[in-house]
Structure formats: structure tokens, C-alpha cells
Image 1: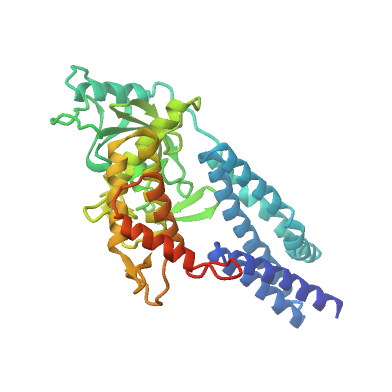
Image 2: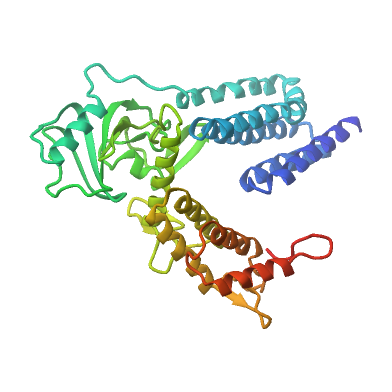
Length: 425
């Protein structure tokens, strides 16, 4: 009877964890829920089944923790120090739950000699270290920065004839969209047309071979394909362990070092990302704001909507749209325009606000609110309407008329009930 109670308690722990994960981690919630189901089967007290139940439970828990650890490590490495610290704190907090999710199945499993193989399971995570260390270049390998600099100089009309010691791939980006790819070892030729203001060259140099099954998107790619940064989201891969991706196409894979050359200079990529400035100053912040505003404006259509989803490597817009994020983007652009006087940001903010006005509903008494045409439940975007008001407040006269702005304010006031709660989405 006591063992059945322990199985039920363990299943309950997994059930609570699965419920918490359903908010943002649906796949992991399903895996933990399956682990709970295995523990419920243990209530039947079938001795022959028990080792397999606990072994399956441990495998599922390790997979969930591996996926969570991979995301937290990625956030801590790629995003800012505050967000990175929060991610590492979440990772440390999750480690405190390990005794509750691992102790019972592990103890029950190792009590049987055949089950002691479970002690080898943690060693299955060792290949994850492959994703945490950087490989050195092979002796004699070319520098991606030097080659990218020479190619860019040649593209601007220079006479440089860049050469490389190993396999090289050069990708031409016209305003962020892949146009041509050239591979070779020496005498690479830049495009015949002059570079535009937002064009760039992506130069990849092969460093060393990668064992099959250990390829990482954005860093590794086959020799006979496009850049790893182009195929990072288009090549089907399965994440077997943290930072261990198994390509569905069993091709020999190569690890690449990459550099990006543009009118702003040449920089080597770090795991597919352009590193930020060594020191954060008001000047670097202003430059980042203007670059972000230019990027958003570049992806804005004639109707004022932004390119919400981009399909790589073509750069074509994908399906779907989100009006709260549209309004938040308009607010950001309005703040950039107000702070810097940038005409690109102001024009983009005005177009975005005009689109919200075009998508707004009105009541008989003059109130107005943003209404997503895709919604069928009749509910209005109250938070989105509030963001539109903030954008108008930051940058008066951008986009909508004063009449629609007054209607927005009246609707926001009418949406607050006697208890101070906001009605609407």
C-alpha cells in the first residue's frame, strides 16, 4: 500500500508541473504528463513493469530539463546581462526541483541490478558540452574578417584579389535578402553591381568537420549547401540533447567561422549573431535605436502593417499578424522619432497609426477602439488602443486625427469599471 501511495504522490508532482508548463511549454507539459501517467501505471504493482516505468520516467524528465536548460543558456548568452541573469536564476531555481522529480524513480530503479543502467543516463548529456565550447581554427585557415574586408573593398571598386586557404562560401545580401551564393578557395569575385546602402557580404570559412548528429543550426552546414545562417531555420533538425541537433538529411557537416561586411565595417559573428559594442554609451544606444527603427520601416508595407513574420532565406512575409505588437511597435517608433528627430521613424509611426485608425471601430456616442478584423468574438483590443494613445501622446499629429484620438481616450475611460478593472482584451 505504501508503495502505491508513493507512485500516486509522484504522479501528482508531475501533474502539477505539467499544469504549470502548459502556459508556455506545451510540448514539455505533455512529456511531464506522460511521466505522470507512467507513475500511475505503477499503482497496479506489476514488478516486471516497474523498471521500464521508472526508466521511461527518468528519460522524459531529463529531456524536459535538457530542453529548458538549452533555452536558458541561449538566453543568458545572447541577450543582455539583466535578461541573462534572470535566465540563469530560473535555471538554478529549476535545479531545486530535481529531487522531487528524480529521486523516487531513480531510487526505485537502482534497487534492481538490471535497472542500474539508469546511472548511465546523466552521461548521455555529456555531448551537450559540444555546444558550449568554441573550436579553434585549423592551422593555416584564413581569417573571415580579413577575407570579408578584402571582398568588400573589391566590391566597392578596389583591386583586391582575396584568397582563402580552405573552403569558403560568400553570400550576397541585398537589403537583408539573399541574392547569390558563391563558393571557392581562391580568387573569389564580388558582384558586378555596386553595393547599396543596406547591402552586405556574408563570408563563411570552413573550420573543421563535425560528426554526424552533432550539427548546430547557425554554425554548422554541409559543404555543398548555402550558408549555415541561411539554413538555420529551413533545414529540418531534431534536438536530441541540449545543443545536439540531428540533421534529418545525413550529409557530412562542417563547422564554419563567419564574418559580415557592410558599409558599417566588418565584424565576425558569434554563433550567428553580430556582437554588440564593447561599451554601452549614449552614442551606441542612439545608433541601435536608429538601426532598429530603420529595420522596422524597411519591413513596413504600403498599408502601414509591418512584416510580422519573415520566411528565410527569401525575405518574403509569412502569414499571421498581431495588433497589440503592431501598436507597441508604433509607440516605439514614435518615441524614437520624438527623441532623435529621425524622419524615417516618424513616417513609419504615422503609417502604423493610420493603419490602426483604419482598423478601428466606433460607437454611436463617439468612442473608438482598435478592432482586429480577424476576431469573431466581438471583443475590442483595449490594451492595443491604449498603446495607440501613448504613441499619439509621444508624437502628436502622427497618423490619426484628433477626433479618433479623443474617441480612443473615451473608450479607455469607459472600459474601466467601478472596481478599477479593465474590460476588454
